[in-house]
Amino acid sequence: MTILNETTAVRAGIDCDQQHGAVTPPLYLSSNYSFTDLGQPRQYDYSRSGNPTRDILADALAELEQAAGGVVTSTGMSAVLLVLQLLPKNGRVLAPHDCYGGTFRLLTTLHEKGQLQVDFVNQTDDEAVRLALENNPDLLWIETPSNPLLRVVDVHALCELAGDDVLKVVDNTFLSPALQQPITLGADLVIHSTTKYINGHSDVVGGAVLAKTPELAEQIKWWANCIGITAAPFDCLLTTRGLRTLNVRMKQHLENTEHIIEFLQQHPAIEKIHYPGLAEHPGHEIAKKQQAHSGAMISFELKGGFEQVRTLVNSLKYFTLAESLGGVESLICHPATMTHAAMAPAAQLTAGIKQNLIRLSVGIEQVDDLLADLEHGLSRSQIQTVEGVALKERSHG
Image (cartoon, rainbow, N blue to C red; front, side):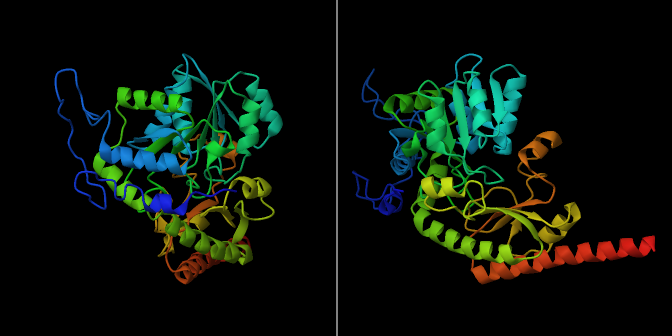
């Protein structure tokens, strides 16, 4: 697979200042810009519509995703909302049944309000996808690997199956353009929560939409200005700075992940691991074909139930219990009560989100510290299980 040019992310915006020759690009905080004369605006007139600092980030992301252009938005969810503006009246969306909880909540709510129609389907089931396509969707939403179960779908095959009349969108947040470039696989649009790997330091919230064609890029730029969801300049400056270290960060994320996977495979507290890099993962061969690496997100099912999960997360020092992902710090998340809490219990069950499911975002810390932390937490969780069983047996004796 062709991987992005590593110098592109490093040089995002570097040495582009034509006025003073600043090596790093200046921050343009101005909300408005003067006209040269009546009816003669400059390139920029109002910062919601266009801003030099924001454009540097948008151009860099477009180059990384091999897109014609793009827009940087205020949040990842505003990027989702921006894409939905391209739907016709009462348009239909075909989305994965296990998509990100925020996306699921938005699509479900808009469906209930009658603003769009949505069909949730297991996109790893070819026959289910074919049947859903018979409803003539206007937009095919793809998320691969999925959040949180890391299911993998064949982007090229799905895009081919959908055909040219369907707008094909891929959420590439879990991998970043360093590991997957959906436009090269047939997607029309790529979205990101730039909060995650793009920025990489958990200090900025943002999103992006990148388009395959200039015409589509102009549409999303028009809508972003119209509904006012473009990102603030200072946020873009920080995100661009983070983007320059994307490749070097990803290398450490991935190296740590490989060690942790080996550790989890041997640990008796683990019931099941969800990770595309494992040969037994149903999407392993597809992931090898369309991804440069399986990524730094891991989900696993812990032996026991909710109380064992509680013991685990409360016993950790280096893995912080928090939502989000893709930062330099390691995080642990309980999807059922955190990222996917907006899903009804029945929808969680259908998606495979169990009470014992744990999601890890592997950071770039010293891997020995991470492994020792997990060993301590996992062992504590199972001690509680053994003690609980013994107590129960004594009470029945």
